[in-house]
Amino acid sequence: MSAACLAQLGHWVELIEIDPDRARSISQGRPQIYEKGLEALLSKHLGERLHVSSIYDHIAESDLSFICVGTPEGEGGRPDLSMVQSACRSLGRSLRDKSSYHLVVMKSTVLPGTTEDLVIPAILKHSRREGDEIGFCMNPEFLREGRAVEDFMHPDRIVIGCNDPTSGELAESVYRGIEAPVIRTEIKSAEMIKYASNAFLATKISFANELGNLCKALRIDAYEVMKGVGMDHRINPHFLNAGAGFGGSCFPKDLSALIALAQSLDEKPLILRSVQEVNERQPLRLLELLEGKIGRLKGKRIAVLGLAFKNDTDDIRESRSIPVIMKLKEEGADIVAYDPKAADSMKRLIQDIEYCPTAADALRGADACIVMTEWQEFSELDEEFDRMRSRVIIEGRRILSCRDIEGICW
Ligand code: UGA
Image 1 (spheres, rainbow, N blue to C red):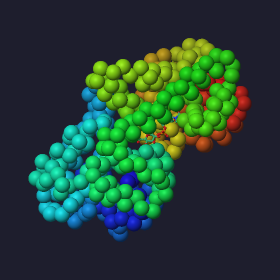
Image 2 (image 1 turned 180 degrees about the vertical axis):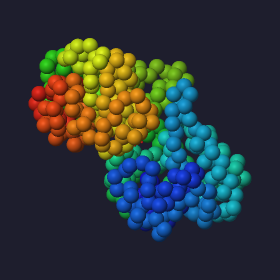
Image 3 (image 1 turned 45 degrees about the vertical axis):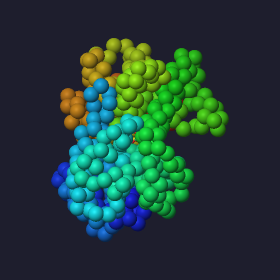
Image 4 (image 1 turned 90 degrees about the horizontal axis):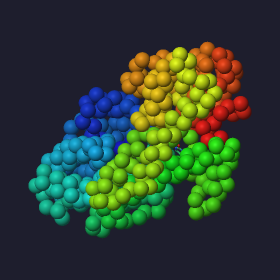
C-alpha cells in the first residue's frame, strides 16, 4: 500500500516482500488484499517507478527505507515484534554495503520505546555502522482499510517522530505534494500518537454503543441522538455510529497492547478495559434481540448478512460476525451466511455453516436475518426480505432503508 502510494508521489520505490508468492502476485499487479484504488496504482507504476523483490536488494542505492511489517497481537496482548526484528536484521545487513547517510523510517505500529530500544540498536548492530551515519524516524500511519489510498493522499496530519533535524527533514520531504499539517515530535510520542488515536476512536464507538443500548431501552433512536451530539464541534460527528461493535486488525489489538503496557507500568487502564468490555458484549445483544422475537434459536434457520469487519473490505479479522456465528452455533441454529467479498476468508475460519452466493439465496426460507456489515447492497433487499419464512430482521449496522426492522440501538 505505502509503496504504491509513494510511487504515486513521484518516488522510485523498491518494495520488499519476503514471501515469494506474495511478491510474485504483487509484481503481476494482483495485491493480496482488496483495497480500493490499489490495483490501479500498481498497474500504473509497476515496472516504472515501482519494483517488487523478495530479497533485500538495492538498499544501498536508496536514500531511505520504510519498515512497514505487521505487528499482530502477541503474548499477553503486547505486539508480536518478530517481523520487526527480522526486518531490522535484514535491513541492517544490507546497509553494510552503503557508505553514505541512510534514513530508516519506522511505520509499523509499535509501543512507545520500541524504535529506540529495539529497532535502532538492531539496525546499528547488523549494519556495523555508527549512529550518526544512519538516521531514524517514527512515522505512524492512520490509513483505514478500504480507503487507504485516499487516506494516504489526503491525511489529516503527518506525524514524524525524530531525534535529529536532518532525519526529520528527509522524512518530511517524502510527503512533499501532500497538503496536510506536519507535526514533528519525539520518537516515543509519535509511537504513542498512533495508539492514542486508535484507542480514542474505539472509545467513541463503545461510548456510542453504551449510550445506544440505553437509547434502545428507552425506545429512542441512538442515531438521532448522536447526530445532535456530533454537531458540537468539540465532539464531531465521526465514529459515533452505534452498532455491533468494532472489529478489524487494529482497534482490538491496539487496545490490548495499550492495556498490557499500562499494566506493566502498574497503571489501571479503567477506560480502555471498559471500551473492550462494551465491545465484547455488543454483538451478543443482537442475539438477545433475536431471541426476544423468535424464541429459542435451536433449529431455526438464521441468515447472517455480512462477514467482513466493515464494508468495502474482505478482511474478517476480529469481525463482530465471528462471535455472533459462534454463539448461534452453540445455540444449535442453522446458519446461512453471505458476504459480497469476505465469504472465502470466513470459510477458512468456519467451515461448518452454509455459505450462499447471494443475499437473496441466504434469505430464502430463513426464519430471521441479522445484518452484520454495512454493505451498500444490503440497503436494497426489501423484496428479498419478503421471501423469508418470516420477515424478522435485526440490524447490527444501520444500512437498511425499510422501516419494519429492529435495530440494535434504534
Ligand atoms: C483504523 C483507524 O480508523 C485508522 O485510522 C488506522 O490507521 C487503522 O485502524 C490502523 O491502525 O491501521 P480500520 O481498522 O481500517 O482503521 O477501520 P475503521 O474504519 O476505523 O473501523 C473499525 C471498526 O469500527 C469497524 O468494525 C467499523 O464497523 C467500526 N465502527 C466505525 C463503528 O462501529 N462505528 C463507527 O462509528 C465507526
